Image (tube, rainbow, N blue to C red; front, side):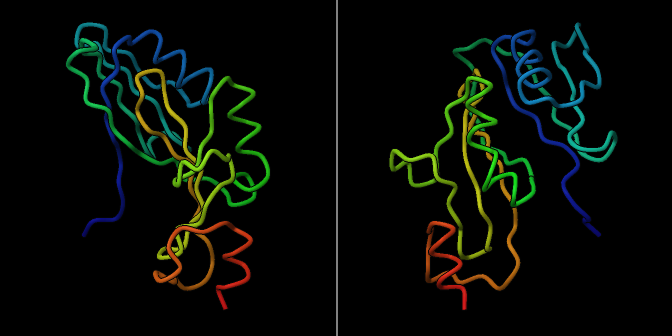
Amino acid sequence: MIKGLYETHIEVSNLEASVEFYKNVLELEFAMLEEKRRIAFFWIGKPKKYMLGLWENPKNELHTRHFAFRCEKDFILNQSVSWLKKRGLQPYNFLKDGTEEPMVFAWMPAIAIYFRDPDDNVLEFIAVLDGEGKPDLGVISYEEWLEKKG
C-alpha cells in the first residue's frame, strides 16, 4: 500500500531567507509560495515526485528537524564536500569527528554526509550502497566498508 514518502515539512524563522537557501544554494526547484499562510513548497528531483514544505514560525518556537536528500554514491564520495563548501556550508560526518569524510552506515548499507540549513535543521546527502548490510560494523569509512563488506 505505501509506496514511498511524498513530502516532508520543516519550520523556518525567515521564509524569504529559507526560500533563497533552498532555491539558490541547494538548487531545488521552487514550486509555490503561499504568502497568507507563510509557507513555500519545493520539488525535490522531478516535479510532483517529492516535495519539501517550509513553514515560517517565530525563531523561539522552532523545532529543528533532520531529513536526507537521496543522491548518487559518486556525488557523495567525490563532489559533495566541495559542492557544499562552495555554497558556504560546513559538511560534517555522522561521527562529528572533525573530518569531512562521508561515512558508511553499514547496517543499511548507505554512505552519507551532513550539513545544516540557516535554521539549524540537519540535512543529509545519502546514497544506498550495493550489497548486504553488516550491522556489526557500525559507522565506518568508505574504505573500511570496501575492505570488510566481504
